[in-house]
Amino acid sequence: MDRGAAKKVMTTFLSGKTLSANQIELINLIVNHLTEHGVMDAALLYESPFTDLTPQGPDGLFASSLVDELIGHWQITATAMSPSYQQQSLA
Image (cartoon, rainbow, N blue to C red; front, side, top):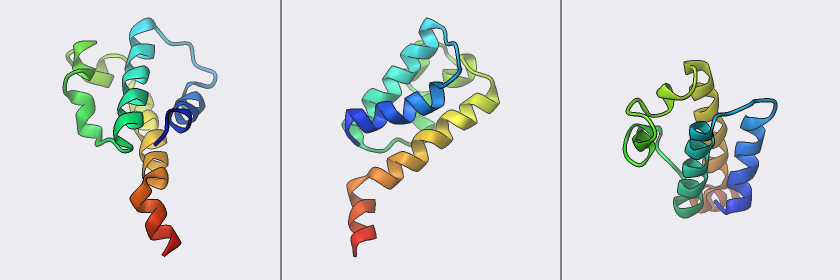
């Protein structure tokens, strides 16, 4: 996933929300990971560097409903935009 696509996903998630500095940092870490790897397993949110902001990972920064929303936003888009998915869609 390119950086523009990852940012678009996060912009959709962020719409209408006011976030703290640590919440924004977590979002930036996710964008960076998606930009570099294209996809992301939700379990990674509970490992470093994501737990460097808070030991509970995203659960320490967001209500559980927002964590679910966050994961839902980037999982669907990351899968839909990954090169292997695009190749399968074209086949």
